[in-house]
Image (tube, rainbow, N blue to C red):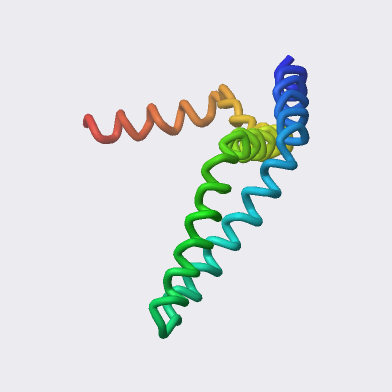
Length: 116
């Protein structure tokens, strides 16, 4: 029953991820452009170059902010990761305590020796 639930959750997350894959790609590209604009702004010597890189950075920031559905894709990717981990984990069985009469005898004998 647990595997069926994991399969359904994984299928929904996969469909959500693939539906938002385009916005996720645009978000990645706009963040790369924003990072590049920041680095070039830090290295710029003249005020005109700094203004140019600020303008590029603002445009990239607006493009990044407008791709809010990409955050849904990131959440879906995380859910897929968790489902994958849960699917492949092995169940750990606790060893059953064996009702060994000799083990109980040794324990009771040790208690008797302590008391007397």
